[in-house]
Length: 314
Ligand code: AKB
Image (tube, helix red, strand yellow):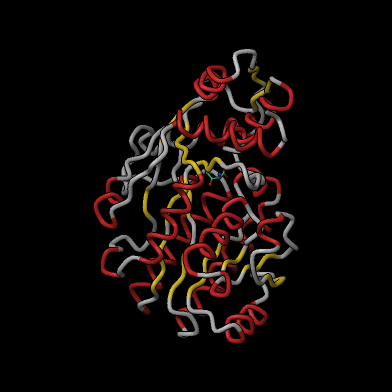
């Protein structure tokens, strides 16, 4: 079962799981009906609010669910605008699923953490798996608290919970909603539709990123590998490549020479500045053999190709 199936990661996760395991084996759920056509017609969908513990339990039981991917969350920028709800959704949603596992109604669960668990005094470059973590956002605080709870449930009740600290995720099928790294997706849409983009982050703001096919691959691999391989039960560092808005703009301009980029930083700049510029993901590489397939250049080419197709531009 995928909770938050209509979101940026959920959409592609459901489609890939259905491809891998069969459509009838994967239940998609979200608080709202799917808009993505592929998702809509690819298999069963149920409306579900992860905060409704009873409805969640009923669905898990009636559909005989063994694995839950719990992707429902308020991201960094949105949670700053509504801190109380950000905390509530991110924490209660996690507890509702962890408790199902603790009570043995499901066998295992995947829960995404984020580079937002790091903060201003965290080492900025090649941020280690274990280091100072002083998140400066509600989202980051909820993810760090969630990581501690995941490890606690695992140690105390042997709950099989697995997690990755997602960096910024770049995708063309479903847009991200309310994150600080969203500029790295918006820029492609604007480049194709208008030939220009105004970035809400400053030109030299370096952030770790990952292309969606790699993120989906990692998510499925960590969830389905042997339990013994998963040595970190809080959450694994993970990354593909790092870039600044200026560097991404330059890559896009290689493919679209007329593209222009300007900057008008807003409140998200401060969030971005509290996060690492690059991530050391050697623990994930060593423990469960993680590796990314896409470089920055591969990603840019693939994004432009697919978005041009989506907008019917030759
Ligand atoms: C965000 O920007 O909030 C997310 C994240 C890095 O977790 N994309």
